[in-house]
Each structure stands twice: as C-alpha cells, then as structure tokens.
Amino acid sequence: MFELLATDSASKARRGRLTTAHGTIQTPIFMPVGTQGTVKAVSPDELHQMEAQIILGNTYHLFVRPGMEVMRHFGGLHQFMGWNGPILTDSGGFQVFSLAKLRKITEEGVHFQNHLDGSPCFLGPRESMEIQATLGSDIAMVFDECPPYPCEYDYAARSLERTLRWAAQCKEVPTPGLKFGIVQGATFADLRRQSAEALTQIGFDGYAVGGVSVGEPEHEMMAAVESSEPFLPADKPRYAMGLGTPPQMVEMVARGVDMFDVVLPTRLARNGTAFTARGTLNLKNAPFIFDKGPIEEGCSCPACRQFTRGYLRHLVKSEEILGLRLISLHNLHFYLGLMNRVRAAIEAGTFAEFHKEFVSNYHPHAE
Ligand SMILES: [Zn+2]
Image 1: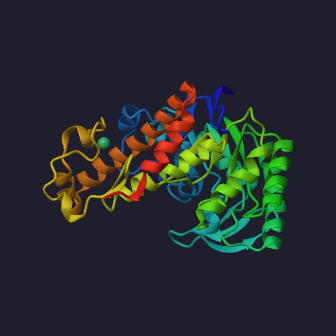
Image 2 (image 1 turned 90 degrees about the vertical axis):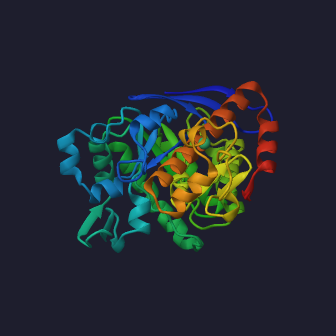
Image 3 (image 1 turned 180 degrees about the vertical axis):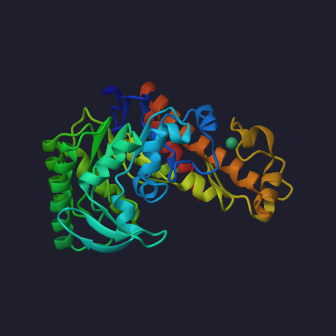
C-alpha cells in the first residue's frame, strides 16, 4: 500500500506513494480540508484541476449534520459530495474534545452535547469507526483523546492509556479502507515513544502524530514529531495532523512526515490573506489599491492568471464571494504546488538546498 520511492541523504525527508481504493497519492502531500463535506468555496472539479490528490472529511461534523441516515441514503461521502478521489476522515475525537460540550468521558467513549442544537450524543471507538465506514473513508483514523496544551504529565499518561485501549478496539472494527493510528502523549517524549511503540505493536496502515498545533509553541510541535518519528515503522506513511504554515510543513518533511492537512489556506482566504513563496500578503492593505500585478508572479491558478491584486483587494473589502473563492483557489494551489516542489526536490536529491532556501525566503507577513 505504501512504497518509499526515494529518501533524502541529508534529512529524514521521504518521497513515497500510497495506494487507496480511490486512487494513488504521491507523498509528501497536502490534503485540503473539507470539514462539512466541501472544501470551502471550491468545487470537486476545481480540486481536480489544481491536482488535489486527496481531501479530508470531518467525522464529527458530518455525524452531527447531515447525519448518518442521510449518508447511508446517498451511499457515502464520495457520492454525496461528488468527489471521486481518495478521502481521509478524522475520527471525530478532536472536535468532540474541542468543540462540543463534554458530559462525561468513560471507558466506552465520550458523552457530549453537539455544538449545533445541544442534543445529547455519544462517540466511542466503535461508533467512530462505524461512522467512517458509512462515510466510505479511504483512510480512517482511530478514535483518540487529544489532550489540551498545556497538559499535566499524569493526565497525559492516563489519557494516553485510554487512547491506546481505544486504538486496539478501533483496529477490530471493519472499515472499507486503510486505518491509521494516532500518536499522542502531549509534550512528553517518553509518552510519545510509548504511544508510537504500542500503536506499532497493534499494527496500522499508517501513523499520525496528533495533539500538535493545539496552541503549543513551534519548538514543542517539532519536538512532538521528533520524539515520535524514530519509533514509527519506516515503511508506513506518517501524517502530522492539523499542520501547518508553509515553512512548518517543509520542516516536518525534513523530520520524516509524509502527509499534512490544515484549514489555513481557506480560513485565511476569508480575511483576504494570500500565501506566496515570500510569505503571506494581506490584500486588505492599502498598498494594493493600485497594484496591477497578480498575487504571485508565475502562479498558474485562476486568480493569478486573470485578476490583479487591486481587483482582489476590492472584492475582499466589498465582501464579495468571488474574492474569497479566488483567494481560496490561489492558496490551495500554493499549498499543493509547494508539495510538488518538495517531492521534486527529494527526487532530485536537492531537498536540503530547497529546505534552506524556502525557509529563509519565507516571512510570516511579507506585505
Ligand atoms: Zn495564484
């Protein structure tokens, strides 16, 4: 299912290929996030045009609305949303712990009130895997608890033990596609190692590093991956959940991570922020009023081929839907294109130079 095609001699970067029921994914890969069964403001045709290889769906959101009766009726998420490529679904754990009003955590799972109408719900390892099977997920994630940051050692250790018991239960529930384990352990290297080793023993098709990008400083984020990666099997894909900025992704590739997902490209588009190789531009800023250039010179996305920064600024300031759509298209195009460049650099044996150059040229707020 996963083939390593090339490895970088100067870092842990890997070039790979992951096969799923709905297609093959070239790694390292960025996965656009389709929280509510849509990558916000972007159609499946547009995702294909920008060569998105796999998208992410959210178990919690789709479970709460439209619900599994609707999903079963339409034959799963691929048919429902009109996307025929691979889909990875998260387990719902992260949203249950971050979004819903918690009632009670038991050995069987979590009782909560959903964030829409407050009605009582329950999700546990079995329920999460069954929902992901109903969605027709190509890559299902195990149900886990994502501890908050910061987190006391004792809580992180107890939470991890339960999460590992849940992982073993998830493994037993049949799902149509691949199944990934999730390394937890908060900021504690010994717990990360324990988690990675225990999950490897259970045996999954891939391994995620979870509990990152939850408000911790960047060095803790890197440390979480560094303390997990050595204990994960080299012949399985690794996925850093909910990451990151462009330079963070490149840094994570250098640390042996193959897969990423983050809402930044579409979320930041909504306030007029565009990504470029030199950093982000806030198109609301006054200097763009008379700017006849594209967001990024040389970009082949629909926004850059046809429209000026000055016009996009006007759309954003006027809160026109087209503005958010065009910047979303550009930002997704940028994230996908960045991973193209990463893959090409690993293949060519030039990843070390690419890594150094990209990170030093990128400034959080370029203009
Ligand atoms: Zn563009």
